Image 1 (cartoon, rainbow over the protein chains, first blue to last red):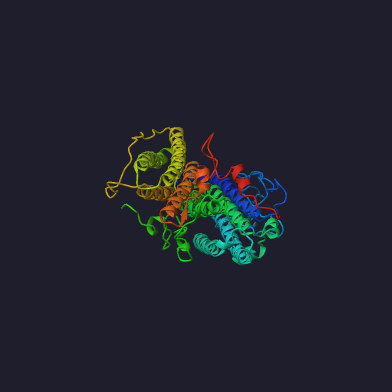
Image 2: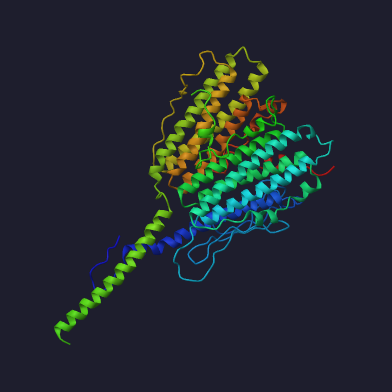
Length: 311
Length: 237
């Protein structure tokens, strides 16, 4: 509101004071979301890191809120860590999530471009959305690699008899990650952002050394379960830093799918349940029935795609 | 300088200042509106209490449903006892997690100076629920309710205004989805319980929250060392 007074002295209008405070808050929120995004990438990095060293879970992030914690076990489980990035904010460039590096996949969230007076500041939610997109592309790549390992499993593998149905479930889960990625790309585009490129993320993917050394079906499932757990945790952390409720809604609708992926894989690999009598190549497509909890655009969620037993 | 000159200069100065001020204010107003629109909705902890109380109502309903369900399962003489025992063990575990959810929601409502809804301890049972239900019917009812809860937790985030509430809501919602999918897969025959289920019912959906937001004594996927150990990759023989 313009409360300029008709005076020789140009008093600072309330709107100027408000906006001058706003970038600091947005920066804090942005750094929080980006910090959480870095945690997310750190988790995915852990899922792909060398898992021979306990506790090698990446350096704890500092700054931003929430800050990354020191990693737990560096063995593909959901420890957290990773470098802290800074979100794009205020200047001509726009922050994009960094792509994973080689080796231990050190990752940072992108830093803002600099220079130029602020004209159209990049939306603060672009960086965290791109971090989530990076995680989805990593998941897609990981499932392709995992399917290959399952297909090449030794006949002596204790889960050998289940390799076909496990592969079918993995393909289904991978297809849901593709839908997540598409939704995130749409969200980033709606903010006039630049989505990270799948090819770049895929090129940097490296499975953990322990999985390469011992590519049993069980290890593939454990790796996948840990990655899904890490993704769910990271989605929850990142959404808390997002400014726009509609992106928190999107992130949560995806997070609830990652948790389903996690529990299905964990239940199978930890022996908490056996494949049921009706599980086959066809029904594997409904093991996690929908890619979203709540319908996103034209993609049905559990609200539309799974009818009640007792309406 | 004459009085008229002064007046004219003053008028011009004022006009210039106003023009600049208006232009500046216009761009600031646009930026402010854009900045305000970005943080959407405006944080309002008191308003969030409405959503939190709706979710708390759902949690109390879930708890009451599992209590009613346990009674039905115990009276079901058609389903084998071994099956009923393992279903009951998992149901009790899920119910305990719902109690933790309720406690966390209640704490947040109180922290927001709100009044938590009262637990009626009455389960809402749909009219289509069979008059002589079996264990499978109880599982189907629980599946429906967990699905509704999971969807509600996500949808309420469209209007939740504070990040604190959003974080908690998402941390609970991601557990309701796990409850749903486990029950759904059991009902549909896509998975089946085994000795591992009976021995470790509390590992079937191991954590009550996704993030460590539930307070002392609660479990989370974020911080669960025992789960880390279980999912550690096996070394080559």
